[in-house]
Image (cartoon, rainbow, N blue to C red; front, side):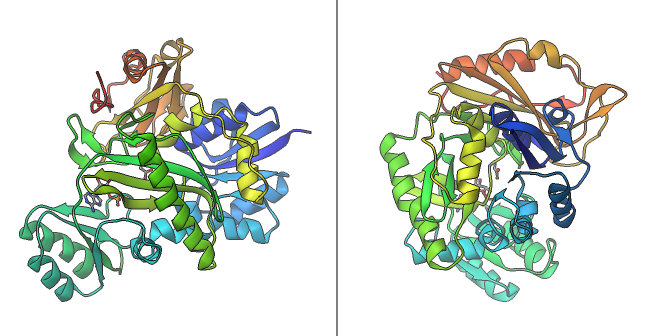
Length: 421
Ligand code: AMP
Ligand code: GLY
C-alpha cells in the first residue's frame, strides 16, 4: 500500500518538497496545507494555515497520514512537531525547543560558543542604554540582530552611528517586533553560502551546496528579501571548505544540541560565509531554505520518502545520491516586493515555459482565480534550469522566464553573477 503524506506550507520550498515526494513510488497521495495553485497540480491542497497545528494534527489523524513534512519555521516555532509526536504521528522537522536555533539568535550564539564553532563576535543586550554605549564605542559597519523571528527583517547592517542608533531605538525602545533582545555582532565579509544538512541527533547528512541572492535588485542592491534566486553547485567552495564546514560546524552543533538534551531532527541550515579568516556562521535555520530548496532537492536522486522517514523515525539513512548537474533558479516577484504589492494579476505562458524538459517552475505565491493562475504573494514563481554547467542552467532558466507574461512581476537577471564565465 502506498503512503499518504502531508506537506505543511505553501511556498516554492513546499512545491519542491511535494515534487520530490511525487517522484517516490512509495507515495500514493500527497496533501499540502495550505499549498498554492502550482502545488495543486501535484497534491490535494487543504485550506489550513501552517500555524494551526492542532487543526493540522486533527486532519492528519482523520486522513490516515503516514508522514508529515514541514516547510516553514512558523509551524515549527508553533510546536507542530511536539503536537504531532504526542498524537503518535510521524513528522519530519525539529521540536519547538530545537527550532530555537533559528528563532533565538542568542540561543544559537551560545550553542556555537560552547562547542567552539566559528562565528562573528557578539554581545547580547536587552537594555537600550547599554546597547547604545557598546555600539558607539565599537567600529562600523556593525550588525544588529533582533533576537526572535522577524520575518527576515530583524537584521540591520548599520554603516554609521546614526543608523545604528535608529535601529536600536526601533528594536529596544519602540519594540517594533515585540519585547526582546538585540544581538550586536561583528561585521564579516566574504561570499555567503547555504549548507543544508539532514540531521537526526548527532548524525548529519550533507546536501548539495547552494547560494541565495538576498537583495531585491541586480548588482546585489536594494532591500533584503527572502531570496531572489539561487544555484548549485558552488565553484568557489572547495571540497576542503565543505569538509571543514561539515566537521567543524554542522556536526559539532548537532552534537552540542544532543548534549544539551535538545536533539535536532530535520534540516539544519547553515548560513555560512567564506571570510578571509575561514568559514564562519552567519545564522542557522531550522528548516529547508527558500529558495535554496528549489535548486537543491531536484538534484536528490534518492527516494525522498525514504530520506524524510529515516530522519523522522531515527532509522538508518539510505545512501544519498546527488545529480552532478547544475541548477539555477530565478525568482519572479511582485513589483513592490519586499514592500507592498498588488495581488490578482493573471500569469500567462507557464506551459510554454515548461516545454523544455530541463526547466521546472515552482510556485511561491500563486492562486487560481477564474481558471487562471494569478499573483498571490511577494515572491510568485521560481523558474529553474538544469544543465551540465551553471552558464547553461542560467540561460535555460532565463529563456523560460522570458516566456512568462505578467505585468506585475520583476526579477533579477544576474543570479549567479559571481560564478558566470
Ligand atoms: P541573517 O538573517 O542573520 O541571515 O542576516 C541577514 C543578512 O545580513 C545575511 O544574509 C548577511 O548578508 C547579513 N549579515 C548578517 N550577519 C552578518 C555579519 N556578522 N557580517 C556581515 N553580514 C552579516
Ligand atoms: N533563503 C534564506 C532562507 O531560507 O532563510
